[in-house]
Length: 227
Length: 249
Ligand SMILES: Nc1ncnc2c1ncn2[C@@H]1O[C@H](COP(=O)(O)OP(=O)(O)OP(=O)(O)O)[C@@H](O)[C@H]1O
Ligand SMILES: [Mg+2]
Image (cartoon, rainbow over all chains, first blue to last red; front, top):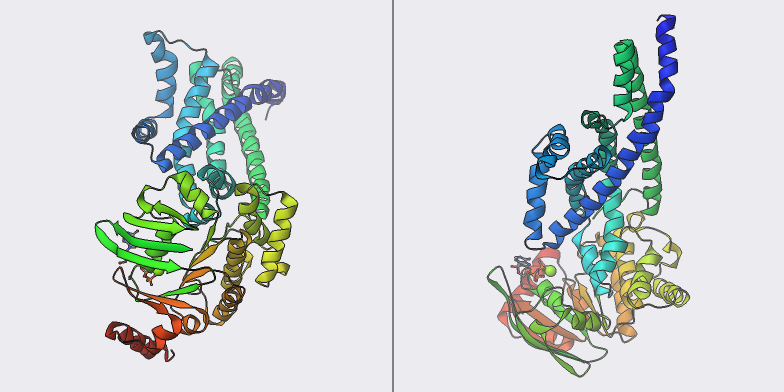
């Protein structure tokens, strides 16, 4: 590797990594948090069998899962202005990522809630607890343990998918790299560099996942064995 | 204390309970026997409003209620006086043995924590599991789980406890321990309805027997009379078939 390439890599690193810390990670964290809210609401609507709303949720999940994420980004950022709805790029990206991931996570959350044996709900009623109390204290904590690995998976996917936001002018880590590469023509070196930074972020998440799982297991009394 | 008249229930168009009457005085232990599919579980579930009856009146502690029209609030109030022990234990998997017992006391009955702990420990002692207080259900044997479930039931100081085949999901060597606990409760004067296939247990512990078959109470009598003066051919043949199965009655 020539000295020039090394110099470019070193001098671009703070710029690229900085956009990762300043944009990619906040974009991921905000979008994913909102996605979880969307997911839990959708899951609860489906489980509580709320008439009308349930069909709406099904429809939403069907649309989101059946269309590409990149197309959704374009629709909202470039398409909605035709209807007079104009959003800045970052909130736009947050909205699309949250709604997109929310649809996938809704299925994860729903399946995890349904995996908690129904008898525990009935036992809760029999000791006088209300639906809300049983959900909050018995069902959701167990569902969360079940949902945790697949949700971590979703988070890892999402942090990489945020690179698509470059297409709608969000100056995140990938776009910052494109800028440097455009100027210097060191594509192989720079895209390798940004790939390594994504890998680093995902490694940290994987490590946090292990830690979280250990903690959740301790709170659920070892690996939860289901009768 | 508890009286049921004309209890009917259909599920998916099948008439499962066809008008069941029963009556229970304080301190009674009513054993419910009968062939599989006879409606025993459905009867208990209706009695605790886990299943909504289609018809029937309940008189409980002097109060008369129309079972199909009970509101959520009314059934919640009624459940404060009852407890249910399930065939499959249904302990809360994310709570320790002790927390399983205190959960209802603290969360549903708003009991101060210290008092709930005290009562829960007394209940665990009663079923011989005080030393397992910090174990999670997954760390307990089936028999131990069922005894914790009984402690959970007892801790609410209910007026009546419903048991649905409390030993059917247990390995044979664990059944005795659970039956002993239920027998001890009976001796302490607890009012109970116990659905069971353990004829020995019904004979020795219950005060009354109700025989359910095809959704009706085919017979209902004090235990001695039920076993010793049984005239109904249907019931005699039921016992003969059990006899053949495990050589005991
Ligand atoms: N949720 C349900 N949906 C459809 N049929 C049901 C349902 N629950 C019970 N049944 C039917 O109702 C009848 C009575 O069931 P129930 O469980 O009350 O009998 P049981 O006397 O408790 O039997 P077992 O001794 O096997 O526990 C059975 O024929 C059963 O198939
Ligand atoms: Mg049954």
